[in-house]
Image (cartoon, rainbow, N blue to C red; front, side, top):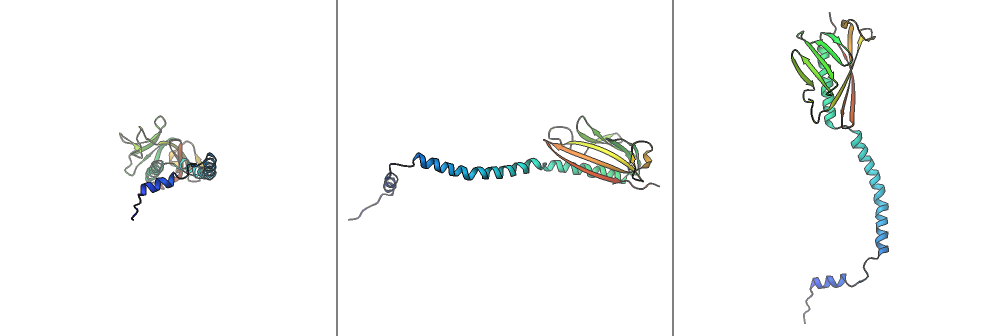
Length: 185
């Protein structure tokens, strides 16, 4: 005689053979063990991940900061002479002897480049509006003998210190550069 085994019936018999199931004590012990293992792991990895993301500015902040610093430094380095200077603006001559100025617009948090009648932003892709990186510019000047220039003849200026800070959503990054001007005849 051949016996046919129905697997479904066999499985249900095995599962239902112990009517007790899991006790509340076993369930509580299991949950406590899982918490003992997962809470320290969550605290360790969670704090590291949180500090990484809050301590690292977004790539856009770096891109705007380095773009602005590069543009300002390159123009200043090639300038044959500064015509006007203060802590948030500088006007100088470009290689064609026409004036260019970099000015901090504190209301909008951008740096404007004025060349003739045209005004652009530094860098050009950081225009005012949503998602804009806020910039802060501080300029300081020194003479050929490394003295601090505060006022007087701008022909005495031989180097410009550029301090730029870019901020976005409570993340900020600062970059400092000294640009030595070309020697004038």
